[in-house]
Length: 305
Image (tube, rainbow, N blue to C red):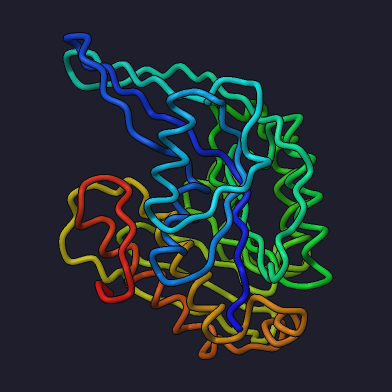
């Protein structure tokens, strides 16, 4: 049986106000994008976020459900649904204002859950960040963990404690994916190779760094070498959601390969070679290539890859 996957993290409404005052709203949030991406790739996906009992919360829940994601009942609370307002001036430059709420209670894992993914704001914003840690610890006896730091300095604040938090979560994770921008913020002047080696030393079995148009670089605990793979994007409309789409494809590929999703997968992944992991990396590149060819955080299905 295929494992159930749980994604824990923020889902919010992005509100864009142009220079004329016209406002448009879109469902956003990195973990929510990953959840939808995994569901579109054929996986059974639960989502734990923090939504209000309000029209925006209902819209997010309906949007996730429409992509095949099951929103856990613990995801609804007394706070209003989080928003991010981007106000554009006449040149198109944006200024941002956030109204974020993250008070997620401790999550009871659904029976059959074999993997938990988390990342972004939800991993550092209190008080809900403690529930994120609890979910990662809870699943380790029955499955595996993936993590995307997705650093947002304007929200997360001082990066010194954020770096400590990232490394705490890396130590609980089997797979870690970060962008070169994340590394520049957290480890200025250090190469991706050095950071990935450090993360594998902390406990991750697979570390991947995305390099934009230059593809990805990755390493695994069971192989001393370094893997590289080029982008598969032939046409770029925008890069919104590209990293989340890559993450969904990577996790999906590793689950399909039997390297994530059950108690024995951790050991199998720990001893996997670069070539054994490469098909999952290629699936991530394929999903993100489709995403950047469409406007917005589009999540492709398997038949589009």
